[in-house]
Amino acid sequence: MAEAKTDMAMMDMPAHRRWLDGEGQRLLAFSKASRLPSGGFCALDRNGERPEGASADTIITARMTYSYALAAMQGLPGSVPLVDHGLAALSGLLRDDVNGGWYEQAPNTPEGGGQKRAYVQAFVALAASAAVILGRPGAKDLLADALQVIEQRFWAEADGAMRESFSADFAEEEAYRGANANMHSLEAFLAVFDATGDTIWLDRSLRIAERFVNRIARQNGFALPEHFAPDWTVLKEFHADRPDHPFRPYGTTPGHSLEWSHLCLKLEAGLSGSGHSAPAWLAECSGALFAGAVRDGWNRDGASGLVYTVDWNGKVCVPNTAHWTLAEGITAAALLYRRTREADYAEWYRRFWDYVDLTLIDRRDGSWFNEVDADNRPSERIYEGKPDLYHAYQPTLTPRLPIAASIPGALSRGELKD
Image 1 (cartoon, helix red, strand yellow):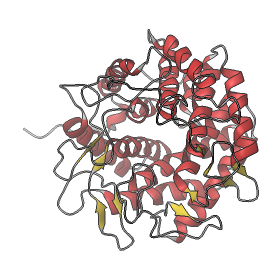
Image 2: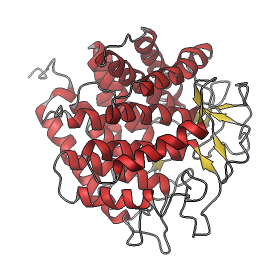
Image 3: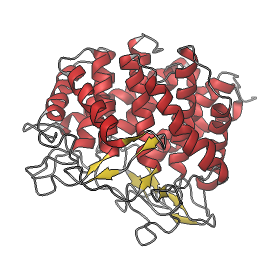
């Protein structure tokens, strides 16, 4: 008997969309344990338990607040109280009431205080934006506070990019510029636009993309450098002694190219949807970044998965596959298929989900393994435990949504397909 064939892409199949919904709800249920009675959210261990003595983490708290805001927009029970729980911690426990801005950890803990990082402030703005769109009390004040800190301390108008970090009192600035913090700032700015309607955040998003995508990535064959001096000189040897750093690894990171890829299309949609002209290079660079990522990172050296980092000669540096790279790849493939209708992107979408289903989903202890090694065995070389709902949850939504500036904006407009 001949094999049955269909021209329908996997992401358009009703059964697949039901599967996405079920997987999303499974992830949401697992992460509810990260709520701390003392305020905020913490990372869970591999078994889904709160570690003894766990304290609130600002990035995790912001990501949980954001994710449960998305769930609340769909009417999923238990979500609104978790959003409010996160808002309370971001407005109080984790905020520096003296100098402004947000710590990475609660200041009354051994890890608390320290630098004020653009990466952290961006996630606070992302969470606050989603909560504003949801209509939660206190969200507008939190967003206004976050935007004031970003504008007064972190946004460099002359550069069209974000400064990286400061001392706790903002007296000393780190002599470093990073692609990662700017990438997540772009993501946050698109959500801020959806929450406020202020197009200045689209303008700033475009300026970030212009620098990092249309200039830096293009000049480097769409293998995007991550680390820069204040004058934007590429720091090619940065963290050569720490190649598996969780935020600033040595070399290039194919997973980040996938993330930049779909952000280009979201920015294009935000600009077009608001009556602005979207430059043609956004779609062009989206495809080129995707191609560069799978060229450099997918199924390298006889192994399967998407490697964490590649060095400047194209050699695999850290072969482990982080779960978030597949999450970003799924979103990028889905949006590129929606944008171009090219069958190759639908095939990549299926290929990525097949890998997630057979390798990353932990059906015994819940959620996804945070990373696996070159032999696809669970590993904690880069990341510990299972702290991250944010990355895994979003690709259960984006394939069921049209291309839009932000997920909360699209959900608020009732654009989710069952």
